[in-house]
Length: 302
Ligand code: AMP
Image 1 (spheres, rainbow, N blue to C red):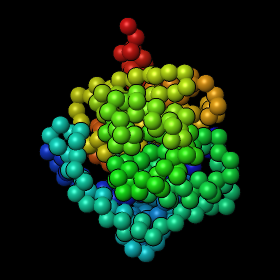
Image 2: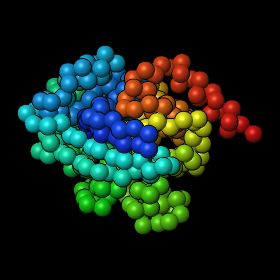
Image 3: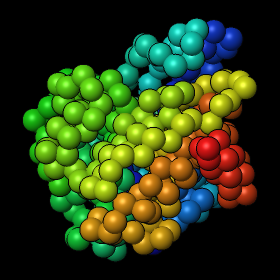
Image 4: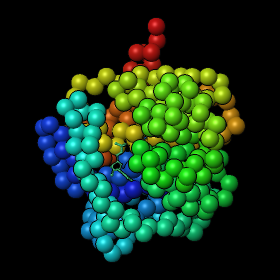
């Protein structure tokens, strides 16, 4: 079943201890779309500037992503730049240049309002809300966000959270949003804000799932080399919601498929840091994912 995603389609400049790469394809919607397209048809909503390379749009389209919702406007494409610390986990945002994103108002192409699965990727919560308003009766809505929005647009974030089924955050975001230190207490507090289920990502330590039937902890795949972790969270979201769309899960179902989605998301995300930009996700096959899923299951079996 089809997935609608709204998020950033960006150019990223990334610095690591080894290398610096300028203006490569990035953005929450790009990583998500390429990952989710392994599982289900994806419809992408976003905006790019007149500097956006046609080959980057072609890459998304070649992977089966419907790009009819990606508007091209005169101005610059959203540009994010960041520098990773030596641990390749912590990063500093050096610049966020909104460009055409500054006055972006998402528009759904005709016929997209009935899309059953919705991923509100990391963008301003008012834009996430606009998209939700435009969708008729989704089966499942998943939201991703970041510290910036929790700190600067809290009321807007709380408004959209009331209508979301699953929230994806990392551990520091969960603490900031909930005001709680313990992650179980943080998840409970977030569930009281609207989402029935919460996923808390902990980078190289894996991810936690909190649902009506309990908690699941999934370890991260152990990687021998990390080149560029940018987009791992969005790729996780792609595998997670991709799986749920493929099995046509509904918010009122039990937790079983959501727990399986945790494993799929972890397996997909584990490929992202292996190279810069979207390359590892664009090159991914279902067989690659299946291999990592098997590896994860073996690692989790006592
Ligand atoms: P992740 O590493 O999964 O957190 O995702 C990183 C991606 O998010 C990069 O490709 C950025 O272009 C994008 N990004 C960073 N900051 C923002 C922001 N404020 N709004 C939207 N997208 C962003």
